[in-house]
Length: 147
Image 1 (cartoon, rainbow, N blue to C red):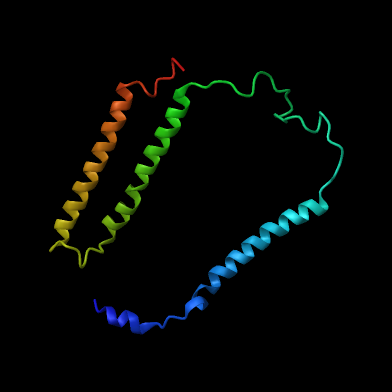
Image 2 (image 1 turned 90 degrees about the vertical axis):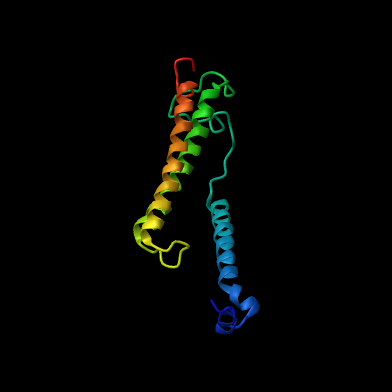
C-alpha cells in the first residue's frame, strides 16, 4: 500500500475537522443543562416531611435493616455472568468473519487453510471456556443450597 497516496488524498484542515465533535458535545451539554433548569423551574417546591422523605417500596412499609449482609455467592454469580457473557461476545465477530468469505490478502494461501485455522482457534477458545465452567461446577460455585 502506497502511504504517499493517503497523505495527498485529503489535506489537514486542523480544528475544522473537529467541528462536528465540538457541536455534538455542545448540544449534549446544552440539553443536559436545559433539562435540569426546566425541572428546577417547573418542579414543585414544598415542605419536606417524614412521609415525603420516606422510601417508597411498592406501597409496603420497609422492614429490617438497609445494610444487610449478602452471601458471597450472589457476587460470585454476578462476576461469573459478566465473565462468561463477555467471552461469548467474542464469538460473534468470529462467526461474522468466518462466514463472510473475506479471506483475501490474509497470511494464508488458500481459504481452506484460513477456515481450518479459525475453526481451530475458536474450538480452543470454547474448550477453555467449558473447562472453566466445569471447574466452577466441580467447586460448587453455582450451588445455592448453602447461600
